[in-house]
Length: 444
Image (cartoon, rainbow, N blue to C red; front, top):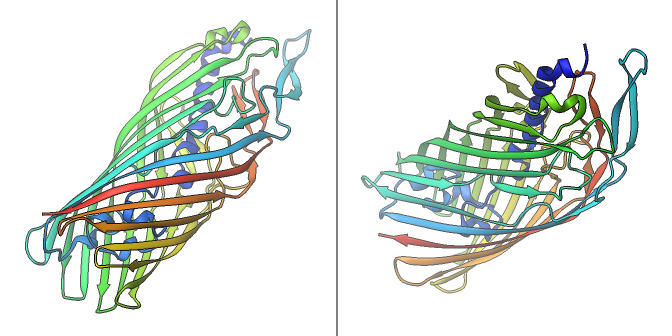
């Protein structure tokens, strides 16, 4: 069977490759915590134990027992920097017998292209908001609208990483209707439904069989609506609050299209447009434990730990006509944060905090589409009460990523005579981000 007669198989293989690349685009490695300007100022160190709509994303019990209606609106500008560097990536094109035309092995050579991609993660602004209203002195309802997984990476067309990542655009909208109930003066409970819309575009280059030929190109688009839930409790006394909540894993089901162009020679018949491509995968549940202690009349100490069971993201399951699964093998991860709020005057509060976050990505499985690493986050911020009903919040964060490897090996046209291997060897270096948040709170 020649490569030309295998064109349908090659098209399916390209689709598998595209969904495989899509995997890290939904990773918690780039889960955005920027759901509150107030929380950003203390590195999100006490959100599960605080009260009001600012904390609704973390714990629906936060609105139980509120006396007035209240709303919050925030926006965070995310300004990342860093270099994604080639450290010896090889491309292995197949070789063929001159007499039989059958593949005989691979010819490996440097992947070529621009060996350093600077600042491939685009700058962006992430909005969030929430509103809550008391039905009785013990029961309140509310809704939070957030964007927990949203970013764009954009590599040059001639980047060394072009076969695993060209441009990635991910946008999520999470709508969380919630209810909170003050069961007693010290016990508050809450529950919520998470309605999440995901829209993604993922591009990458495809190698032709000859290094002398320009690359082909594939673009995958998909979207879908999915559902999860959140439940939480808070325990209150005169000087301390403890909050515990759980955000469920969400089974995402995306449907979209794949377009392959620019393949020539024996691969030309694989230039296709496929509608109705499907993929399913799990994002992790989160266990959130937080505490706030009023050390003095002016000083409140905060702490929060979040455990992510990213091991649920073990495969991406592909529907018809592929009917296969791509292994991901993410590991469970966590974040730990501490911080404080200090009331300088009755109207002005300053806050600060630090957070340590472990990446769920593993060495040997990390790719350039979302080059993640363990990180430290340092934060400072403050609030000012303009009137009895209006307050402003502002915060700044500096996120310092550790240097790490980019080493996930991939292949195009897997399982066919045209299989082309990409032995990725790269590194993330000098990566950091500045996050500037501004928000306002209104009671009514």
